[in-house]
Length: 343
Image (cartoon, rainbow, N blue to C red):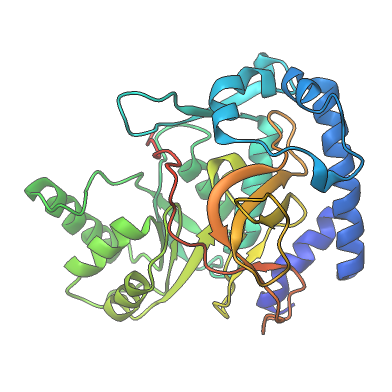
């Protein structure tokens, strides 16, 4: 099995396919799951029952869901009893005013995240890797904990450091933390790191030795090309990129070794690219706002949720041979998405 087709084979398993998936079988699955998701949400959520009381005949005519609705109607969006929720993620707005967003997950929803992480990480990691996780990892269910579980599922070793406190405006304490992370990389013979671009750029700036890193995965922030180049030069390693947000279940799309866009987790998420002014779905290849619908979530499904992020569909076939659709690099975020908490 070629590593570039790994996510295809994983997706085929989720569809119940014995052989490799085809574009036709995947599109038919998505169409079926969209109908099931809308039906499930209307039957189990007062928010969706009210929002879709005049259900449109076509999915693309359903009204969009907004971040403001999430802030104001979070409990009404639930499709399960509160006691069935195992994890609530709070996203701060960063200001003294403004209600935070809260996203709810059942245990089954979190297992979907682990499943995607386990298979997505296989594009760059294997059982011989030792991986430093610089993401929130203090409590069960946090992104770092889920990622650590996923990596250990296929035999990799992990160091769950958590989210660094260091910030680009260098302080003595910040410099000490970055130097400490470099020592961990050296002492533990770390071969891979998962981190925010901000922190990894600081580590690369402080690096004096080439070290043992084979790869770095950047996520949770916009990934600047200059940052990628800096990290690759500093450690002589390969940089991968991941795009996702908490509402998506923490994961959406990941780059393969060809570094030509991000392969989407299509069995769990349906992505649309829309004109942000008209709301019309745009032709493939045109830039617009990313809108997504969850296909497999139980606790808090999202339907046509506007992310405020911008990208386009890549129309050429990836050199890895995957049939999964690819998003182009997601542009800098204009809207406040909320800040990760290491808790």
